[in-house]
Length: 411
Image (cartoon, rainbow, N blue to C red; front, side, top):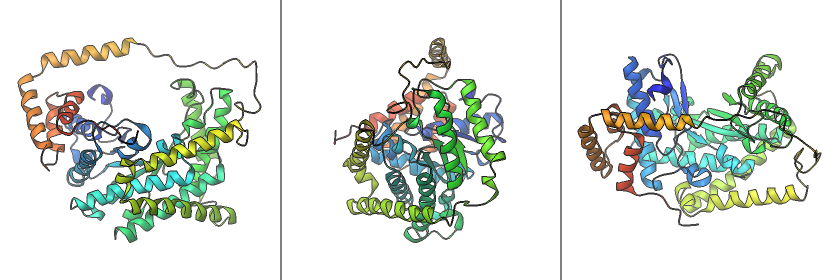
């Protein structure tokens, strides 16, 4: 983390990390580096994704079982509420749910159901909803059905405001806001005719802006082939800048509001999403719905139906199942990573372990193991561990020894 943040003034720059199972530990590292820079935790700004439920649902980068994982999330909520008030403690993600094959309505429903579970867990831990709600953020996908995507974002915003006001009794209007980041859809990008992806990304980005996003990531045209090249990233950036500065769509709030079709589609998506949330509530909440595989099954069925439509050409993807170039040759460069990077990082870790105070490391790991068996907030111990060069892997391995590793029972 020192290497990563070298030269980045943490009192001026907000940082975001798509990290989940070990999110609390990565945040502890940022806090430690901030101290070394002379920046107190109270001045740090940024976001950790920290959304473990969607890992069980769609992405798979979990470590621990759901209950201790939820405990880590509420520990972060409580600690940051006191010590790091400018930090976004969670980015509740529908992005990966959509990438796994969900419909637009399912993306809304399962994302907000996860959000409900996190808020309820924090309330059950004794936290005041208005003390942490404005530190929640969301992360959505943008796909190609332009008007449906605009309506999706509008429906999600309206539903979350209702949930926070009426389900959790939040009083502060800031607690009602669905603050969200959008990334264009990685699963919509094609390896065939990759230049077409520039158009897809532009449409998706425009839909996100018209739907009210506060933050935007545009994918590179080559991401179906490799990590993006610098040239591809620049086109993606210019796409955002053209929308922001040339299109005029940022001149007014909710530019498509009042359109009969948009309003009707917003209502329709809200009703569909609410039906899923009602079923999840009936089951006992998102945690139980995840453990029983209900949400995963719904996404798998949606993905199957989409693939079936694709193969029947009832759903057209340009360059894939229609308008194909049989003699197509790849003309764009792709990024190649140097394997020496991995070897250098391994060498750095070995050097760190040889030079640190390994007695102190053993002592802290013992304290962490003991604390993990109690209800003690683990964030202060994580900070002490990383300040004494206990590695991320060692911290997680210590917690595995107490909580075990998650193995889904529904597979």
